[in-house]
Image 1: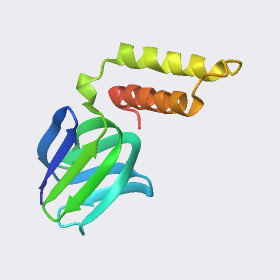
Image 2: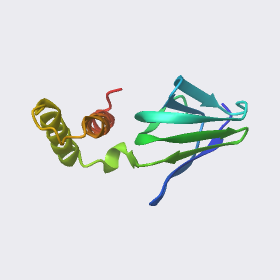
Image 3: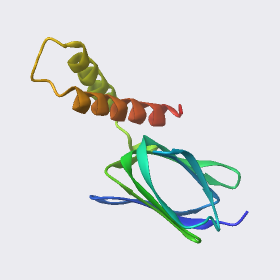
Length: 136
């Protein structure tokens, strides 16, 4: 199969720069599968996993915390707020963040809690744990 270049970039710098056959990501409008020669587009991304496929099998899994995906015929660029390769995720830290967020959401009696922010923190933590464990 034909390959193309994929860059995943965060404000802290590049996370992935590789050639792949397929990129799969969760956009606001639904799951996207991008192959070489795809029509140019820009799409906002949700918190989720980006799957990179090479030689017909998943080569990398990257946890992202939202951002944008830009598609050009020979290049896909993902500008993410945060991104981590599965092998770089500190799963203990992610599970602690998940527990903290769950506790915040359960303590509804506290009026000064920003529940939307706690929900997003919970989604990010669950996503990181799932990517680390290979669950999608």
